[in-house]
Image (cartoon, rainbow, N blue to C red):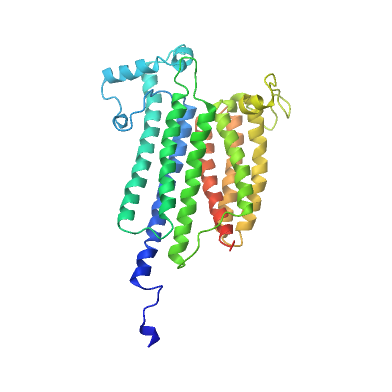
Length: 354
């Protein structure tokens, strides 16, 4: 008799509250994949000095590139008004054909940003209307949407920081905010997708917690990513093409004329040195994370080890090749994959924190 009575877990109301976590998880993983591509294209944009080629932000009409020579000339003339052209590109003999090359990468980078906004916002609205979002997840999905909006705003502030006649590049501080927001969003997407995938497999599964170990690893990894962004923003990768020594010495010469704070945030030689050696502290933290992860899922442990191993090799190769475009781009792309793998590992150890 009791078997004929519907349980609370299988009632229509319970099914409605459960939503479609499996579908949402697949969607979030797909968006995370596009963000990794976005980070890679952003690296190319930075390394080709393309970021200042478009001097205006037009959210809608900016998706259409110049369609004739007159429009191209107008865009080129706008670029010629800023310091990067007047003090770097112009004296180097930039032609309209050269300008079209750098314009493409900045345009494509912005186009990908618009695409990510659409593939996130439109499905989210549909899932919301269909009541597919499980209880407790709406606020988190909305927060990720807001992060995406902030990412676009930070990107424009970054570009705007380099548009004056006095500047020849964007602010490395704004560049770091732009990049780190993208990586934080990537980690949030992966974490939420893993929560939802677990919920689809285990009824009433609780979201994973952020453990003390996760906090420590995150702080160490954040410092390394921040240093990497500053190195990119200041072209500090060119400070040395040798490894492990710089200027034939372990600690290179750097300027303290304006104090330690300025040196740590502005001196390319010191920042290059800090980035290459803090990496080993990050490796140690990631090894600890991988060991904690292994009992729960050996694949996550292997992903973390593989990501940081490749990342170290690519970092050294970037130095030895004098910041080769494609090696340096791969270094940034694997950095994004490393963040995703670390989020996976942190999520696994957070599942046991009940």
